[in-house]
View (cartoon, rainbow over the protein chains, first blue to last red):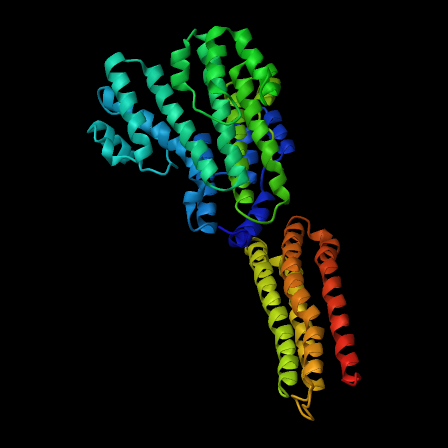
Length: 321
Length: 160
């Protein structure tokens, strides 16, 4: 859509950005000392209502994002790129549920583009034609693998690869620079995580080639070769890519790398704070809200488990404002 | 051929009002969308964003002014409308700066006004500075207005 289509929406978002949590507030949450104190501070910012527990508050905040965006944008499909992750998570859950006895309540996530019950029924009845075309082949393959080999990891890899491919494709198709960048970053960092895990667990090249999704900023064949060779070869390959800055974090842990990826995303979307036109400021706001919810979840979990402040701080993501 | 002079002069006057008016309508409309977005969440900023919304509206007024002066000069609003073909073309040309600059400057001023509305939304105390950015675009609309006015009055004294 032309830039003119989002002028009102961007102006509303500019107002909402004033309510985003900043680094100083997150630091106060970490320093609050207890989950109760942190929840009280969040309540003062309008997060949740009385009687709600932490998870209900965070789920409510996620719902608020989509309620607002739904109010501002007539066709929410432009943001499907953010919702495919939940769809593929639900597909994975539906396949595993269909291959195991009984039902498992609470395994499905809200906020996808497809009703989880549709996936649940389709997988239970093996009616692959009832799910979107892009999902059929990976769903069929993953279910086949799970039934024949009981290899849950390979099943996950097949679905994750399909999810990354779909997210990247949707980002490219959106004609939005930011959504395109988001799709590419999610896909590339997902591939790096898979390669690192594969390297640590001694997976061979053919497994890794099955698991890695193609993207523009990485050569997946070389990544699979390096990961199946040794961790030194993998580090050497990553050092030669545009993700070389992540190497230090990767050496620490995968969660440190995930934190780096999220911070990179925030850094890339920050220029949208000064853009008054088009879809990108809205996409940046969605990402910023999701990231602050993630940070708050990390802080609350840390406080609940009496983790030291410096350990929590290491995991808290950068803020958009 | 005799009447073509007044035809071209009238066409120039119409273009001036029409194109500047279109530019202003687009500009005020776009800035209005941004202003409405701000007021939805904070009605106290209404007066500030209203001023910014109105800035792209001036081109339409300038266009109307040029059209009015031209119509007066060529006798459409009374007096003699005996305009030679050459003079008619000159009037047409004289109206063009206001017509074209009015159209484009209004649209561009609206873009600057929208960004300024975002600025006021986040930092209301910076309202004064935020006015300057779209106002700079106004300079070129005023220059075009001056050229058109001087040309129209100059043509009247030409003996062609």
